[in-house]
Length: 183
Ligand code: RP5
Image 1 (cartoon, rainbow, N blue to C red):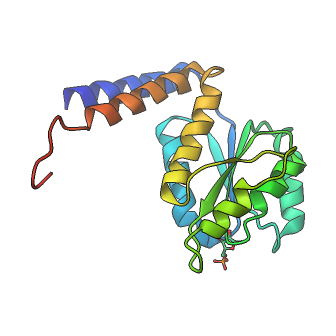
Image 2: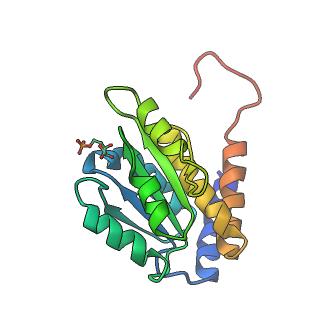
């Protein structure tokens, strides 16, 4: 508990240290149905004190919105885009083609093929336009946020410290030995 309290206090202090107001990360997704997965990226960025914005941008249902979003992302101050999509998941690759910003792709778990379709659609970009692809589903959404924070950490000391705290909490939560009925 003391460790947690100290960490919480430290986190609050760190967040006050540097005032980052405008979004650094854009979290976009192809559908409302992706939000259950993508909110894990949002929650992780909140924990790390990384300002972000969220938007539904569909490559095939709202192509003009996708074009406008990707084209304006850099000039609006975003540094990284996290794009989640499922099925024939072309959103991350299309957005990567339209912006110089780094794009991390989250393959959302699809009903028909459990997200293998999403994974292959996102990860198999031909050479020239990269999409940093993470794991299918919840783990991928969380890790995309951690990757984004790590990429920003060298430039924002508050994010670097928050990442250290995140890892320390994670380490402290691992018991020494297994028990039959864990709490
Ligand atoms: C993709 O199609 C979305 O990213 C979503 O994962 C999938 C299904 O979309 P909905 O039919 O649920 O809107 O565009």
